[in-house]
Length: 439
Image (cartoon, rainbow, N blue to C red):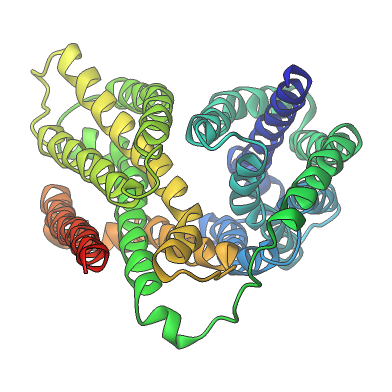
Protein backbone atom coordinates (compact mmCIF):
# COMPACT_ATOMS: atom_id res chain seq x y z
CA UNK A 1 0.00 0.00 0.00
CA UNK A 2 2.82 2.44 0.86
CA UNK A 3 4.50 1.67 -2.48
CA UNK A 4 1.23 2.43 -4.27
CA UNK A 5 0.88 5.70 -2.34
CA UNK A 6 4.45 6.62 -3.27
CA UNK A 7 3.65 6.06 -6.93
CA UNK A 8 0.55 8.23 -6.66
CA UNK A 9 2.41 11.06 -4.92
CA UNK A 10 5.11 11.09 -7.61
CA UNK A 11 2.42 11.17 -10.32
CA UNK A 12 0.64 14.06 -8.54
CA UNK A 13 3.93 15.96 -8.43
CA UNK A 14 4.48 15.30 -12.13
CA UNK A 15 0.98 16.62 -12.92
CA UNK A 16 1.65 19.69 -10.74
CA UNK A 17 4.89 20.49 -12.59
CA UNK A 18 3.38 19.73 -15.99
CA UNK A 19 0.36 21.96 -15.35
CA UNK A 20 2.58 24.76 -14.00
CA UNK A 21 4.76 24.62 -17.14
CA UNK A 22 1.61 24.65 -19.30
CA UNK A 23 0.42 27.89 -17.65
CA UNK A 24 3.92 29.39 -17.91
CA UNK A 25 4.07 28.60 -21.63
CA UNK A 26 0.53 29.77 -22.32
CA UNK A 27 1.07 33.24 -20.80
CA UNK A 28 4.76 33.63 -21.55
CA UNK A 29 4.35 35.71 -24.71
CA UNK A 30 2.23 38.38 -22.98
CA UNK A 31 5.31 39.85 -21.31
CA UNK A 32 7.23 39.94 -24.62
CA UNK A 33 4.68 41.87 -26.70
CA UNK A 34 6.50 45.23 -26.33
CA UNK A 35 9.64 43.75 -27.91
CA UNK A 36 7.68 42.20 -30.77
CA UNK A 37 5.98 45.54 -31.41
CA UNK A 38 9.33 47.31 -31.42
CA UNK A 39 11.19 44.83 -33.67
CA UNK A 40 8.46 44.18 -36.26
CA UNK A 41 6.68 47.54 -36.05
CA UNK A 42 3.46 45.94 -34.78
CA UNK A 43 0.73 47.92 -33.06
CA UNK A 44 -1.59 46.88 -30.21
CA UNK A 45 -4.12 45.53 -32.69
CA UNK A 46 -1.51 43.16 -34.16
CA UNK A 47 -0.45 41.67 -30.83
CA UNK A 48 -4.13 41.48 -29.90
CA UNK A 49 -4.68 39.29 -32.96
CA UNK A 50 -1.84 36.98 -31.86
CA UNK A 51 -3.37 36.65 -28.39
CA UNK A 52 -6.88 36.16 -29.77
CA UNK A 53 -5.75 33.43 -32.17
CA UNK A 54 -4.58 31.34 -29.21
CA UNK A 55 -7.83 31.97 -27.31
CA UNK A 56 -9.93 30.92 -30.31
CA UNK A 57 -8.08 27.62 -30.76
CA UNK A 58 -8.17 26.98 -27.00
CA UNK A 59 -11.95 27.43 -26.99
CA UNK A 60 -12.45 25.18 -30.02
CA UNK A 61 -9.99 22.63 -28.68
CA UNK A 62 -11.72 22.47 -25.28
CA UNK A 63 -14.71 20.74 -26.89
CA UNK A 64 -12.46 18.44 -28.93
CA UNK A 65 -10.46 17.56 -25.80
CA UNK A 66 -13.63 16.45 -24.03
CA UNK A 67 -14.53 14.12 -26.89
CA UNK A 68 -10.98 12.71 -26.97
CA UNK A 69 -11.03 11.96 -23.22
CA UNK A 70 -13.99 9.63 -23.77
CA UNK A 71 -11.88 7.63 -26.25
CA UNK A 72 -8.30 7.87 -25.00
CA UNK A 73 -6.70 7.89 -21.57
CA UNK A 74 -6.17 11.39 -20.09
CA UNK A 75 -2.55 10.61 -19.17
CA UNK A 76 -1.50 10.33 -22.83
CA UNK A 77 -3.50 13.43 -23.82
CA UNK A 78 -1.91 15.42 -20.98
CA UNK A 79 1.56 14.56 -22.26
CA UNK A 80 0.51 15.22 -25.87
CA UNK A 81 -0.74 18.69 -24.89
CA UNK A 82 2.67 19.62 -23.46
CA UNK A 83 4.50 18.27 -26.51
CA UNK A 84 2.23 20.11 -28.99
CA UNK A 85 2.38 23.46 -27.18
CA UNK A 86 6.16 23.18 -26.62
CA UNK A 87 6.87 22.29 -30.26
CA UNK A 88 4.89 25.18 -31.74
CA UNK A 89 6.45 27.59 -29.24
CA UNK A 90 9.88 26.67 -30.62
CA UNK A 91 8.61 27.34 -34.16
CA UNK A 92 7.31 30.78 -33.16
CA UNK A 93 10.74 32.47 -33.22
CA UNK A 94 11.32 31.48 -36.86
CA UNK A 95 8.69 33.91 -38.17
CA UNK A 96 8.68 37.61 -38.95
CA UNK A 97 5.12 38.35 -40.13
CA UNK A 98 1.90 38.81 -38.20
CA UNK A 99 0.16 36.04 -40.16
CA UNK A 100 2.90 33.53 -39.32
CA UNK A 101 2.79 34.44 -35.61
CA UNK A 102 -1.02 34.18 -35.57
CA UNK A 103 -0.97 30.77 -37.28
CA UNK A 104 1.69 29.29 -34.98
CA UNK A 105 0.04 30.65 -31.83
CA UNK A 106 -3.31 29.33 -33.06
CA UNK A 107 -1.79 25.82 -33.28
CA UNK A 108 -0.10 26.36 -29.90
CA UNK A 109 -3.55 26.94 -28.39
CA UNK A 110 -4.73 23.46 -29.39
CA UNK A 111 -2.01 21.97 -27.19
CA UNK A 112 -3.14 24.07 -24.24
CA UNK A 113 -6.79 23.16 -24.82
CA UNK A 114 -5.97 19.56 -23.86
CA UNK A 115 -4.55 20.46 -20.47
CA UNK A 116 -7.42 21.34 -18.08
CA UNK A 117 -9.82 18.45 -18.82
CA UNK A 118 -7.02 15.88 -19.07
CA UNK A 119 -5.27 17.13 -15.92
CA UNK A 120 -8.37 16.88 -13.74
CA UNK A 121 -9.23 13.36 -14.95
CA UNK A 122 -5.55 12.39 -14.69
CA UNK A 123 -5.67 13.44 -11.01
CA UNK A 124 -8.98 11.62 -10.51
CA UNK A 125 -7.60 8.37 -11.93
CA UNK A 126 -4.77 8.31 -9.38
CA UNK A 127 -6.59 9.69 -6.34
CA UNK A 128 -8.55 8.00 -3.63
CA UNK A 129 -12.19 9.23 -3.89
CA UNK A 130 -11.94 10.81 -0.43
CA UNK A 131 -8.85 12.81 -1.45
CA UNK A 132 -9.63 13.70 -5.07
CA UNK A 133 -10.80 17.29 -4.43
CA UNK A 134 -7.84 18.08 -2.16
CA UNK A 135 -5.41 16.58 -4.70
CA UNK A 136 -6.92 18.66 -7.49
CA UNK A 137 -6.79 21.83 -5.37
CA UNK A 138 -3.09 21.10 -4.80
CA UNK A 139 -2.45 20.70 -8.54
CA UNK A 140 -4.42 23.85 -9.36
CA UNK A 141 -2.12 25.87 -7.08
CA UNK A 142 0.44 25.44 -9.89
CA UNK A 143 -1.52 28.16 -11.75
CA UNK A 144 -0.70 30.63 -8.97
CA UNK A 145 2.93 29.50 -8.81
CA UNK A 146 3.28 29.99 -12.57
CA UNK A 147 1.63 33.41 -12.22
CA UNK A 148 4.32 34.46 -9.75
CA UNK A 149 7.28 32.99 -11.65
CA UNK A 150 6.27 33.96 -15.19
CA UNK A 151 6.62 37.78 -15.15
CA UNK A 152 9.84 37.69 -13.13
CA UNK A 153 11.61 34.96 -15.11
CA UNK A 154 10.40 36.05 -18.55
CA UNK A 155 11.32 39.70 -17.95
CA UNK A 156 14.78 38.71 -16.72
CA UNK A 157 15.45 36.36 -19.65
CA UNK A 158 14.24 38.99 -22.10
CA UNK A 159 16.45 41.71 -20.61
CA UNK A 160 19.47 39.40 -20.46
CA UNK A 161 19.23 37.39 -23.70
CA UNK A 162 16.37 38.80 -25.80
CA UNK A 163 12.77 37.81 -26.51
CA UNK A 164 13.69 34.92 -28.83
CA UNK A 165 15.70 33.23 -26.10
CA UNK A 166 12.82 33.71 -23.63
CA UNK A 167 10.36 32.08 -26.07
CA UNK A 168 12.80 29.26 -26.88
CA UNK A 169 13.34 28.64 -23.17
CA UNK A 170 9.57 28.37 -22.64
CA UNK A 171 9.17 25.97 -25.57
CA UNK A 172 12.15 23.82 -24.57
CA UNK A 173 11.09 23.27 -20.95
CA UNK A 174 7.49 22.58 -22.03
CA UNK A 175 8.59 19.97 -24.57
CA UNK A 176 11.13 18.49 -22.15
CA UNK A 177 8.51 18.29 -19.37
CA UNK A 178 6.10 16.38 -21.62
CA UNK A 179 8.80 13.89 -22.65
CA UNK A 180 10.04 13.52 -19.06
CA UNK A 181 6.54 12.74 -17.70
CA UNK A 182 6.10 10.18 -20.49
CA UNK A 183 9.43 8.49 -19.64
CA UNK A 184 9.18 8.66 -15.84
CA UNK A 185 5.45 8.10 -15.25
CA UNK A 186 4.42 6.12 -18.31
CA UNK A 187 5.27 2.76 -16.75
CA UNK A 188 3.53 3.68 -13.48
CA UNK A 189 0.44 4.72 -15.42
CA UNK A 190 0.34 1.39 -17.23
CA UNK A 191 0.78 -0.60 -14.02
CA UNK A 192 -2.06 1.16 -12.21
CA UNK A 193 -4.28 1.14 -15.29
CA UNK A 194 -3.79 -2.63 -15.68
CA UNK A 195 -4.99 -3.13 -12.09
CA UNK A 196 -8.05 -1.01 -12.85
CA UNK A 197 -8.74 -3.09 -15.97
CA UNK A 198 -8.62 -6.28 -13.89
CA UNK A 199 -11.07 -4.78 -11.37
CA UNK A 200 -13.32 -3.62 -14.20
CA UNK A 201 -13.43 -7.06 -15.80
CA UNK A 202 -14.39 -8.70 -12.54
CA UNK A 203 -17.23 -6.23 -11.93
CA UNK A 204 -18.63 -6.59 -15.48
CA UNK A 205 -19.97 -3.06 -15.97
CA UNK A 206 -22.67 -2.11 -18.44
CA UNK A 207 -21.59 -0.75 -21.79
CA UNK A 208 -22.15 3.00 -22.07
CA UNK A 209 -25.13 3.93 -24.16
CA UNK A 210 -24.93 6.24 -27.12
CA UNK A 211 -25.64 9.86 -26.45
CA UNK A 212 -29.26 10.65 -27.32
CA UNK A 213 -31.83 13.34 -26.70
CA UNK A 214 -33.74 11.29 -24.14
CA UNK A 215 -30.78 11.59 -21.80
CA UNK A 216 -30.71 15.38 -22.13
CA UNK A 217 -34.43 15.67 -21.44
CA UNK A 218 -33.89 14.75 -17.80
CA UNK A 219 -30.97 14.90 -15.42
CA UNK A 220 -28.01 15.76 -17.67
CA UNK A 221 -29.45 18.93 -19.21
CA UNK A 222 -30.31 20.32 -15.76
CA UNK A 223 -26.91 19.56 -14.22
CA UNK A 224 -24.92 20.82 -17.21
CA UNK A 225 -26.96 24.04 -17.22
CA UNK A 226 -26.43 24.45 -13.48
CA UNK A 227 -22.66 24.01 -13.64
CA UNK A 228 -22.27 26.01 -16.86
CA UNK A 229 -23.98 29.18 -15.63
CA UNK A 230 -22.12 28.96 -12.31
CA UNK A 231 -18.75 28.55 -14.02
CA UNK A 232 -19.59 31.38 -16.42
CA UNK A 233 -20.26 33.94 -13.68
CA UNK A 234 -17.31 32.88 -11.48
CA UNK A 235 -14.78 33.30 -14.30
CA UNK A 236 -16.47 36.56 -15.37
CA UNK A 237 -16.01 38.00 -11.86
CA UNK A 238 -12.50 36.72 -11.34
CA UNK A 239 -11.15 37.75 -14.75
CA UNK A 240 -12.84 41.16 -14.64
CA UNK A 241 -11.44 42.04 -11.21
CA UNK A 242 -7.98 40.68 -12.08
CA UNK A 243 -7.71 42.44 -15.45
CA UNK A 244 -9.36 45.79 -14.73
CA UNK A 245 -8.55 46.55 -11.07
CA UNK A 246 -5.72 48.93 -11.97
CA UNK A 247 -8.00 50.94 -14.24
CA UNK A 248 -10.89 50.95 -11.74
CA UNK A 249 -8.68 51.90 -8.80
CA UNK A 250 -7.02 54.85 -10.55
CA UNK A 251 -9.96 56.25 -12.57
CA UNK A 252 -13.00 55.45 -10.41
CA UNK A 253 -11.86 54.91 -6.82
CA UNK A 254 -9.02 57.49 -6.66
CA UNK A 255 -6.49 54.92 -5.50
CA UNK A 256 -2.87 54.48 -6.63
CA UNK A 257 -1.20 51.96 -8.93
CA UNK A 258 0.76 50.58 -5.97
CA UNK A 259 -2.49 49.92 -4.11
CA UNK A 260 -3.96 48.17 -7.17
CA UNK A 261 -0.85 45.99 -7.53
CA UNK A 262 -1.03 45.10 -3.84
CA UNK A 263 -4.73 44.25 -4.24
CA UNK A 264 -4.12 41.89 -7.19
CA UNK A 265 -1.13 40.24 -5.45
CA UNK A 266 -3.20 39.66 -2.29
CA UNK A 267 -6.02 38.28 -4.41
CA UNK A 268 -3.64 35.77 -6.02
CA UNK A 269 -2.13 34.75 -2.67
CA UNK A 270 -5.53 34.23 -1.04
CA UNK A 271 -6.54 32.12 -4.04
CA UNK A 272 -4.12 29.43 -2.88
CA UNK A 273 -5.78 29.33 0.54
CA UNK A 274 -9.23 29.31 -1.06
CA UNK A 275 -8.35 26.35 -3.28
CA UNK A 276 -7.06 24.25 -0.37
CA UNK A 277 -10.12 25.07 1.79
CA UNK A 278 -12.42 24.20 -1.09
CA UNK A 279 -10.59 20.93 -1.76
CA UNK A 280 -10.93 19.87 1.87
CA UNK A 281 -14.61 20.83 2.07
CA UNK A 282 -15.45 19.11 -1.22
CA UNK A 283 -13.88 15.88 -0.01
CA UNK A 284 -15.90 16.26 3.19
CA UNK A 285 -19.30 16.84 1.52
CA UNK A 286 -18.57 14.29 -1.20
CA UNK A 287 -18.25 11.41 1.26
CA UNK A 288 -22.04 10.87 1.08
CA UNK A 289 -22.64 9.81 -2.52
CA UNK A 290 -26.43 10.18 -2.25
CA UNK A 291 -26.41 13.86 -1.29
CA UNK A 292 -23.10 15.08 -2.71
CA UNK A 293 -24.71 16.72 -5.75
CA UNK A 294 -26.84 19.03 -3.58
CA UNK A 295 -23.94 19.48 -1.13
CA UNK A 296 -21.65 20.74 -3.92
CA UNK A 297 -24.38 23.11 -5.13
CA UNK A 298 -24.75 24.38 -1.53
CA UNK A 299 -21.00 25.00 -1.32
CA UNK A 300 -21.14 26.95 -4.57
CA UNK A 301 -23.92 29.13 -3.12
CA UNK A 302 -21.75 29.96 -0.09
CA UNK A 303 -18.86 31.03 -2.36
CA UNK A 304 -21.27 33.08 -4.52
CA UNK A 305 -22.59 34.92 -1.45
CA UNK A 306 -19.03 35.72 -0.31
CA UNK A 307 -18.12 36.95 -3.81
CA UNK A 308 -21.23 39.14 -4.00
CA UNK A 309 -20.54 40.62 -0.57
CA UNK A 310 -16.91 41.35 -1.45
CA UNK A 311 -17.97 43.06 -4.71
CA UNK A 312 -20.27 45.29 -2.66
CA UNK A 313 -17.36 46.32 -0.42
CA UNK A 314 -15.00 46.60 -3.41
CA UNK A 315 -16.70 49.75 -4.70
CA UNK A 316 -16.75 51.30 -1.23
CA UNK A 317 -12.96 51.60 -1.32
CA UNK A 318 -11.52 55.11 -1.69
CA UNK A 319 -8.39 57.13 -0.96
CA UNK A 320 -9.16 57.19 2.79
CA UNK A 321 -9.66 53.39 3.04
CA UNK A 322 -7.28 51.57 5.37
CA UNK A 323 -4.73 49.05 4.18
CA UNK A 324 -6.43 46.33 6.25
CA UNK A 325 -9.79 46.84 4.51
CA UNK A 326 -8.11 46.71 1.09
CA UNK A 327 -6.29 43.47 1.93
CA UNK A 328 -9.43 41.94 3.48
CA UNK A 329 -11.60 42.63 0.42
CA UNK A 330 -8.89 41.32 -1.92
CA UNK A 331 -8.63 38.15 0.18
CA UNK A 332 -12.41 37.67 0.13
CA UNK A 333 -12.57 37.96 -3.67
CA UNK A 334 -9.54 35.74 -4.27
CA UNK A 335 -10.60 33.09 -1.77
CA UNK A 336 -14.27 32.89 -2.81
CA UNK A 337 -13.75 32.84 -6.58
CA UNK A 338 -10.88 30.33 -6.54
CA UNK A 339 -12.76 28.10 -4.09
CA UNK A 340 -15.79 28.13 -6.37
CA UNK A 341 -13.62 27.25 -9.37
CA UNK A 342 -12.42 24.12 -7.54
CA UNK A 343 -15.96 23.20 -6.43
CA UNK A 344 -17.35 23.52 -9.95
CA UNK A 345 -14.38 21.70 -11.51
CA UNK A 346 -15.01 18.73 -9.21
CA UNK A 347 -18.75 18.95 -9.92
CA UNK A 348 -18.01 18.87 -13.68
CA UNK A 349 -16.23 15.53 -13.42
CA UNK A 350 -19.24 13.95 -11.71
CA UNK A 351 -21.96 14.73 -14.25
CA UNK A 352 -21.99 11.28 -15.83
CA UNK A 353 -21.66 9.40 -12.51
CA UNK A 354 -24.53 11.39 -10.95
CA UNK A 355 -26.66 10.70 -14.01
CA UNK A 356 -25.85 6.97 -13.85
CA UNK A 357 -26.93 6.93 -10.20
CA UNK A 358 -30.25 8.61 -10.97
CA UNK A 359 -31.07 6.86 -14.26
CA UNK A 360 -29.61 3.44 -13.32
CA UNK A 361 -27.68 3.22 -16.60
CA UNK A 362 -24.19 3.94 -17.83
CA UNK A 363 -23.75 7.12 -19.85
CA UNK A 364 -19.98 7.26 -20.48
CA UNK A 365 -19.58 10.81 -21.82
CA UNK A 366 -17.73 12.41 -18.89
CA UNK A 367 -15.22 14.25 -21.08
CA UNK A 368 -17.85 15.69 -23.40
CA UNK A 369 -19.99 16.92 -20.51
CA UNK A 370 -17.05 18.60 -18.81
CA UNK A 371 -15.94 20.24 -22.06
CA UNK A 372 -19.40 21.78 -22.46
CA UNK A 373 -19.12 23.41 -19.04
CA UNK A 374 -15.56 24.51 -19.91
CA UNK A 375 -17.01 26.39 -22.87
CA UNK A 376 -19.08 28.43 -20.42
CA UNK A 377 -15.87 29.37 -18.57
CA UNK A 378 -14.26 30.42 -21.85
CA UNK A 379 -17.29 32.57 -22.64
CA UNK A 380 -17.05 34.24 -19.22
CA UNK A 381 -13.36 34.97 -19.82
CA UNK A 382 -14.22 36.41 -23.24
CA UNK A 383 -16.90 38.74 -21.82
CA UNK A 384 -14.48 39.97 -19.15
CA UNK A 385 -12.35 41.53 -21.89
CA UNK A 386 -13.51 43.94 -24.56
CA UNK A 387 -17.31 43.44 -24.06
CA UNK A 388 -17.22 44.47 -20.38
CA UNK A 389 -15.25 47.62 -21.25
CA UNK A 390 -18.03 48.61 -23.67
CA UNK A 391 -20.61 48.06 -20.93
CA UNK A 392 -18.55 50.01 -18.37
CA UNK A 393 -18.11 52.95 -20.74
CA UNK A 394 -21.90 53.24 -20.88
CA UNK A 395 -22.93 52.37 -17.31
CA UNK A 396 -19.72 52.89 -15.35
CA UNK A 397 -17.78 50.18 -13.52
CA UNK A 398 -19.93 50.32 -10.39
CA UNK A 399 -23.18 49.73 -12.27
CA UNK A 400 -21.52 47.08 -14.46
CA UNK A 401 -20.54 45.01 -11.41
CA UNK A 402 -23.93 45.68 -9.83
CA UNK A 403 -25.40 43.99 -12.92
CA UNK A 404 -23.09 41.03 -12.29
CA UNK A 405 -24.35 40.89 -8.69
CA UNK A 406 -27.91 40.67 -10.00
CA UNK A 407 -26.81 37.72 -12.17
CA UNK A 408 -25.26 36.09 -9.09
CA UNK A 409 -28.56 36.51 -7.20
CA UNK A 410 -30.48 34.86 -10.02
CA UNK A 411 -28.00 31.97 -10.11
CA UNK A 412 -28.29 31.49 -6.34
CA UNK A 413 -32.10 31.25 -6.71
CA UNK A 414 -31.64 28.73 -9.53
CA UNK A 415 -29.22 26.70 -7.36
CA UNK A 416 -31.64 26.74 -4.40
CA UNK A 417 -34.51 25.50 -6.57
CA UNK A 418 -32.26 22.73 -7.88
CA UNK A 419 -31.21 21.69 -4.35
CA UNK A 420 -34.84 21.70 -3.16
CA UNK A 421 -35.85 19.56 -6.16
CA UNK A 422 -33.02 17.08 -5.49
CA UNK A 423 -33.95 16.68 -1.82
CA UNK A 424 -37.66 16.52 -2.58
CA UNK A 425 -37.05 13.70 -5.09
CA UNK A 426 -34.84 11.88 -2.58
CA UNK A 427 -37.55 12.02 0.11
CA UNK A 428 -40.21 10.99 -2.43
CA UNK A 429 -38.15 7.97 -3.55
CA UNK A 430 -37.52 6.96 0.05
CA UNK A 431 -41.26 7.12 0.85
CA UNK A 432 -42.08 5.07 -2.25
CA UNK A 433 -39.54 2.42 -1.24
CA UNK A 434 -41.07 2.23 2.26
CA UNK A 435 -44.54 1.78 0.77
CA UNK A 436 -43.30 -0.98 -1.56
CA UNK A 437 -41.64 -2.81 1.33
CA UNK A 438 -44.79 -2.41 3.46
CA UNK A 439 -47.16 -3.87 0.89
